[in-house]
Length: 244
Image (cartoon, rainbow, N blue to C red; front, side, top):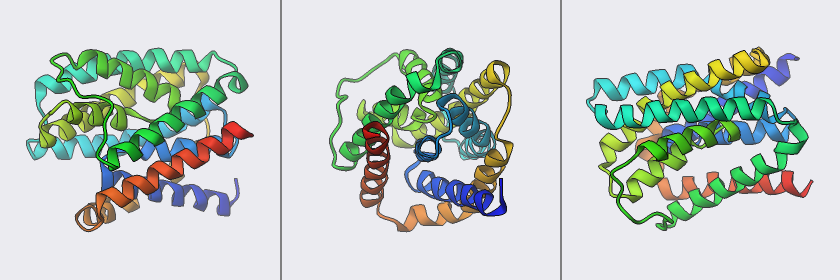
């Protein structure tokens, strides 16, 4: 990989982290959409994104824990089922031919992009309250591993739509994401090995650079336009891939 390509992945990591810092979600969603568009197989793309996310999710989860934003009961009810679902998703994706699964992954990302736009417009497909976040965590982990992203959009959006407390919902979901990401990364490493380290490093460096900037932007950028822009970006990339 040439220096120019490496810098492009640093820029991708920086952009994805800025988005994630502003919205509290979508790092994996943005990164994986671009990696798939560049022709990287779905399993390798998801593994690469999750390995880069280990550091960022760990720092984010620790920060929320220090600030008292983590509901321990909700954390464990999301983290354990999420890790189990993530491992199952990683093993499944690792054993499916890349060309066979690619259209379905892009279709999933397309749906997530649409859901982000709908959320920005104040609409939600989930209304009823829930006392059982375990199945949600399992589904979030499973789809996050298969799609290379989606834990935040699925779990955070659903829990908030079910009238969850904003501070503890976001904090608990972010903390649980570290456990889920670590489990998914280990599963991919045992199934397909560790590869694309320069991409991982580029995404990681970009994310680290962007983290303090994102903390400032979250106070200044209006959430609604950013969410719509990100949702449309993911929708556009996914549609282009599906039409190809």
